[in-house]
Length: 255
Length: 352
Image (cartoon, rainbow over all chains, first blue to last red; front, side):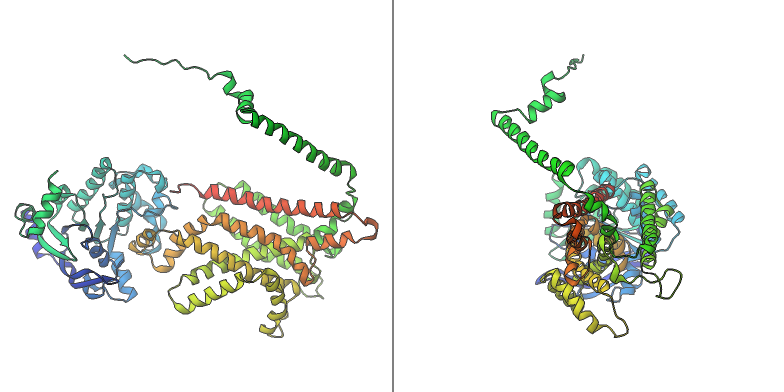
């Protein structure tokens, strides 16, 4: 862990957010967020609900538009220019709480769709890569089923494979295990741990503190539209500085 | 040690024909009463119908005029063109049935075949110029009978569907001009009966089109029906579009699809599938509404029926003629609704 941290200190910044603001109507969701994520880093974002953590990661791939401040992803600035937005969306894979698989397409077609239509791969190549990814998330035998025929955990693993098929540089996870039955959480977390150890840059909104302790380099604690505390994982759990962080940790770690 | 429960047969009175009868027809005293009343009612009605159909009705009015019902005033000399058209459709239908489970290129060829069949049949039926020896022109004005009904319905359905989808998308557009235009169009058409749209298309279309382009009555009626039906299709499709959850758009954008691809690959396939029953219902009513073209002077199946009723030698045989027309309409509408059910089942695989 120590070594990896040092290595990453020299790595380049892949996401830079400066003074990012966002309003939903009158409600000020993001209140000047500053954050930098380095290549290969795994950052866990946690905090009470309504604190803006989901909105924050959704601004990074423009599912939500920020209204003030700068977001720069892999050297491309996120502006209203559609070319920039599409370029950034191609670099970023996203996994949703509700999976959001395409129910009218078979699993294999869910995974190959974007590579074929956006990356313009041949069907053979896309299928080959998709099967490797389904192998990696442990469900190659489900390739010809429809999403509705799979369990929640399997669907979420397909969703991870679908995001990885575009060969993104960054993966965003928006509460990936919150909609799952308890016995399926582990199978999804296992895939995410493997992905983290493979060197993928990841931002994960989650309450799975076990996962955070295992693979996160840093934790960001979000509340009231901003990062209240941000620290290396060990420090965060052992020596939380802010009272709000301590309160939050005591609430989620008591059981 | 496990307890082995014995597997028993159900009591005789619970299963089989007797069980079914007892459960569904003779369970209580009022059910028994209802059963006997229904049997009596069915007997009386069926007896009356069958006596008329098999004994009293004079079907020679239908058999003698069969060709008139089918193709109306289409010249007999050119009858083969209608038969070839029919053959093309039957051939395609049979091929589609045989390859209904096939995927890949076969499917693509079938779709191409169906798409090509329409203009091909159009050319075949209409022909080229009046002077040409090969396929001389048969003006649309003599198209009539069931043939006209089917042409109006099929072309109306095929043409109004894409137009309706475009209108539905336009109504949801973020560009105010497009949105307002589509909304006004849809609401205007929906606020007006088909008859007035048909009249308008007869009278107004020539005003908008350049004088060299003179459309026949059939073409103008077709335009009117298409414009009318498209507005309804648009509203149905809009309902389907509204049923697609936000997460689908987000997931599609997150994997890098642009707005057009999100629509074509993700949203429309799901939205259209959701509204198949509504759209087929609308097409069935469009099919029956083709009878309204009588008011602009066209002789569809019902128009022909009216003129047959007026024939000297068959005076007074309304019932036979209209019963025949009703059966024809029923057959086609039933085929449509049967096809819709099959389509729903076929596409329903893996639905959430």
